[in-house]
Structures are given as structure tokens and as C-alpha cells.
Image (cartoon, rainbow, N blue to C red; front, side, top):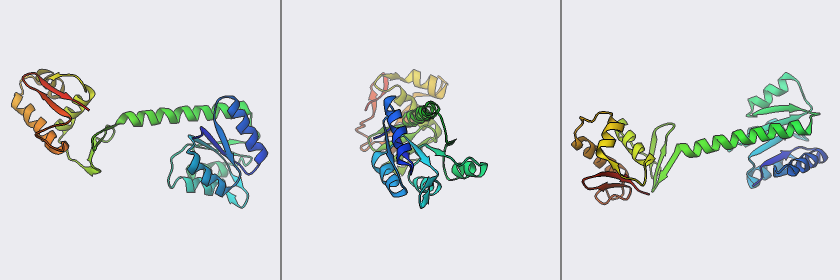
Length: 226
């Protein structure tokens, strides 16, 4: 896997950028035409693509559009073409930024590093938003829950209860704590809590009567275990 893939039909420019980036610990490789660029993007799985507009018989616009069918990798266009129409076309087909030649290598490196940092941060946030256990997937962002790829409908309080237990995984969560922090009402009966736990097990556990994740600590409370 490369940090950066340069796709430019001028092999000398591509090699020079690649060498400069590698000097500053940004792992870089390059391709010099449309087909080679597609193949390299699929095989190397770069975190960032630097893409020239002119690629001989093809264009960087066409290549970007093709990549966007299967990938959301950040794409920085590098080109001698500097009209507003070119910039709008690049952004319109899925490019993330545009820089015109000639450019300072230091400026190009700084821009590339900034895009890599933003991409890494976004991936980290996305990973943190996803919760997986067993065959269950939860997305904090959309509140979507899947079991074996199929949607599971949780009531709002069931979802809130499950999320609280997951966020406190590996430790005993008392009934009083759940009533106070999930329901925010200590006068709710324990029976209500027990029913919600039972419903969660029925919807998420392979064997509800022998739960793998939602454990009961009799007389004390509950614990989420992985």
C-alpha cells in the first residue's frame, strides 16, 4: 500500500515528485497513462492520488470519473491547465483539490500531507462510528443496526440501552446506573429494564436464553462482553 500514487504522462515529472515525497517519508509510486493508473490504483490502494489532466489519448477527468465508481480516495489534480473551466471540471468529476503547474515541490508536499492527514482523521472517525460484535454491525452516525447484513429494528430506548452497555463494555453496570443514565428516571421499575434486555437478546443474540454478549450478573446488573 502506498501513501501516494502519481498519475502523470510525463515520466520525468512523476519520478521527480515521487523521489521528493519519498525523501520526506511519504511513500510514493507513479504511473504514466490511463490503464496503468487504473491498475496501480487498484493494486496499490493509495491513500491519495495526484492526477494530471493530460494523459495522452485519455484525460485525468475520465480517469477520476472511473475511479469514483468504486473508490472515494482523495484526488488532487495537478495540471498546467489553469482555467476556471478546468478546475470546475476536475471538481465536478470527483476531484478534491487542484493545483497548477509549475508549482513548488514544498507546497505540493504540504498540500498532499494535509490531505493525507484529513483522510486519516476521517477514516478514524468512521471506524469509531462503526461497532461490530458477532454478526452484528452498528453505525452510530445513522443509528442503523444490521444482523448478518439484514436490518434489525430497535426501539429508541433499546438502542440507547445497548449503546450504553457497549460503551461500558467489560464492567458491571448496575440497574440503578442504567435507570439513571439511560432512562434518566430512577422511578422506572426494574421490570421495564428486564423487558428491554430480553428484547435486545431476542433481536441480537444467537441463543437468547444463553446470551453471548448481554450478560446478567444476578442481583447486581448487566455487562456487555465480547
